[in-house]
Length: 265
Length: 328
Image (cartoon, rainbow over all chains, first blue to last red; front, side, top):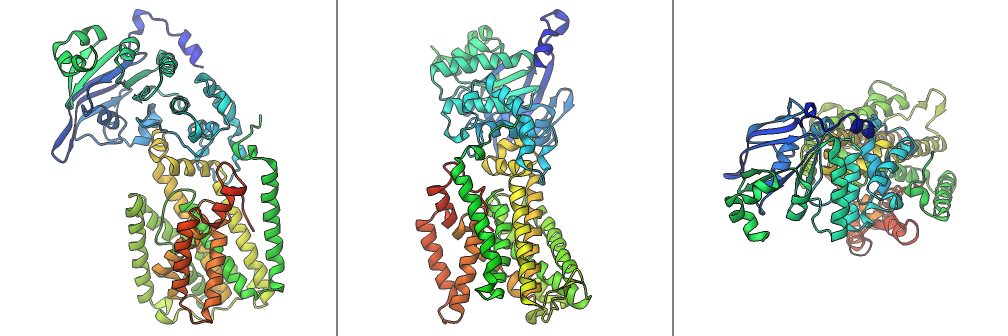
C-alpha cells in the first residue's frame, strides 16, 4: 500500500511539501513559569523536521502540547487542516498524529508480537470485543510480522517485550507506531542512549518512514540531525530561537552561542 | 494462519498441568458437599467469585478500587428485597442484583476513572461510604436488622433451592460461569487492551485508545460480577445486611487478592478460601480474627510478595507472565 503511494508521488513541483501539522502562538504556563512561549511551527509532509535545543528548552512540552497530552494555555494547533486545539489525545492519535516517548514506550509484559497487534487492533473495532477469544487477533498477525520485519525484529516475535535490549525496545516502539500508519510521526529522542550501529539502523528506518509521512523529532545528536533532517527549529527557554535548514541554523550567531558553541564544536 | 502466541509457547507440560488442576478443582468442588458442610463451601464460593471480580479490575486493568463492597452488598440488598417484598423468583432477583451493581458501578466508575492511583481509590472509598450511609438510612434495607428471612424459592420454577444440595450446585454453577466470564474477558481482544493500559497507559492513549472508556467498561463488568456474587450470597444465607456494604468488606476483598495473588486467575479464589476458612475456624475460638488476618497479611507481604498462587506460578509454572491458568 505504501509502495504504490510512493510510486504515485514523484518529486515534482506540483507536489510541493504541504503543511500537515501547524502551531501558531503556542504557549503553556505552569503555575507562573512559562515553559513554552509564542511558538510557531509547521511540519511538512515527506520531510523530517528536528526540534533541538538545550535541556529545559521546552521540546518535550511542545510534543505534549501537539499530541494534546497537555492543554495549551493559548495558541492554536491544526492537523491536516482541522483545528485540534481542544481535541482529546486519543482522538488526535486516531486522526493520524502519533508520538513516541522519551522513555521507551512499550508494553513490557506482552510479547513483541502482541505489542504490535495491540496497535493494529483498534482500527478493526476489535478493542471492545470482550466475548471473543484471543484467536480473534490471529488475523492481525501477518501484518504485525511484516512491521516487525521492517524494523528487523521478526526473530524476537515471541519474546517478552520487556526482555529486549534497549535499542530493540526503541525499534519495537517504532514498529508499533507504524502499525497505525500515522500521517505525522512525533519521535522524542529516538536515538537517546543508543550505540553507533543502532543509530545508523534507526536513521535508515526514519528516513524510510518520512517518504510518505511527516516526521517531527526531538534529537540531541547533532550529527544525526545534520545528516537526517530537512528543517530544524532551535528552541531556547521555551521560545523559537532560529529555524531553517542545517546550514542556515548552524551559521546563526545566537544559535552558536546558545547551543552549538557549547556542545558541537 | 494461526500463530503461536506467548501462552502457546509455554511448554506443553505446564499447560497440561494447569488443565489438570482446573479439572481436579472442579471435581473436588462437585464432591465437596459430601464431605464438608455445604453452607461453608457456598460462602467460600461467593467470596471467591467476589474476589475474582475484583481482580479483573486490580490485576488486569491496574485499578485499585476501595469501594467494591458497594456492589457486593448493594446487589445483596436489591436481590433480597425483590425476592422477599415482590416475590420474584431467585434467578430474577440475582439478575436484578447484578444489574443494580452494574448501574452503581457505572456511576462510581464515571467519577473515579477521572483520577489515578491513590485518588482513584479515595473516590471509590468516598462513594462507597455514601452508599453505606444511604443503606443505613433507606427504609427498604431495614437498617441494622438487614433484610431477613429471604425465601430461597425455586429456580426457574422447578428446582427447589431449600434443598441444600440443589442450592449448592446452583451456587457452584454460578461460580463457574462467573469465573469463566472473567477468564474470557481477560483473554479477549478487549482484555488485551486492558492489559496494555495497565502496562503503559500513556502509550495506549498515544495508540488512539480512549482509555477512559475501557476503564469504565472494565469497572462496570467487575461491579456486575461482584454483584452476581453478592446477590447469590443473599439467596444462600437468606439475608442481606450492612456488613456487606462496609468499607471493611472492601478492604477484605483487597486482602483476599493480595494473599492469593493479583493478576492470577486462581489466586483471588485461593485467598478468599483462606480468609473465609480462617474466619470460620476462629469464630468459635474467641481469638480475634482481624489480628490473625493482619498477621497473615504481613507475612504474605514480607515473604510471598506475589501472593500464594503468584509465587507458585513464578517458581514452577510460567517462565513468562503467570495468570492464564484458572481454577475451579
